[in-house]
Amino acid sequence: MSVLSARILEEIKELPAKYPQPRSAVMPALDLAQEELGYLTPDAMTEVAGALELDAGYVEGVATFYSLFHLAPVGRHRFYVCTNLSCMIRGAYGIVDHLKQSIGTKSPDEVSADGLFSYEEVECLGACEYAPMMRLDHRYHYDLTPEKIDAIIAERKDGKTVTPPAPVAPPRKRAAAPRKKKAGDG
View 1 (cartoon, rainbow, N blue to C red):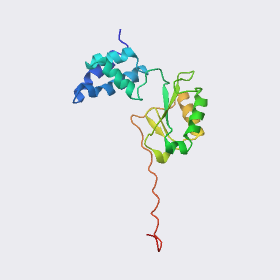
View 2: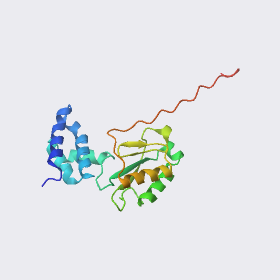
View 3: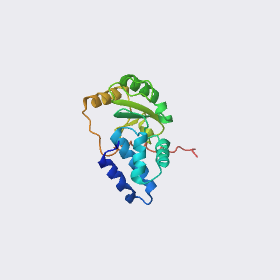
View 4: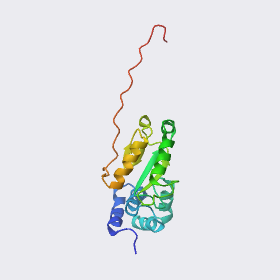
């Protein structure tokens, strides 16, 4: 019995035609499997390997190398909170502490009691000027505060949000005007 649906297996089998080499299809195939199951089981990775006609060890190696793939259950909504330098300086650890308390978890390997939430501290998400920030449900959230975290959690619990099809770019901040040189400046 297959752990992946017939529809997902067919999609995976069609992927190699889109790439110069079949191995290039592993990450999108794993993403499809994870999207369906919530995380990657050993059986799912074996089925991905079979559908792509690749060695199961290679597929597992890709899944274990990249942190975007999960080998254990995660919440339906996974918070990826940046704790790199810019975000750390602007309060990311306080955001993480508030988030953990709000969803009822103590560590990244835990899932909230209702199965809705989990979190992970990540390195840079590429929006340092909007720190602290995070990614949730394929969307970036900027200039985080405990109040914003509470509102986001409440929306997810109420089921009021719709996942956008692609990440949303932040609004551009205006650059400061160049400083005028004074007499004697070099």
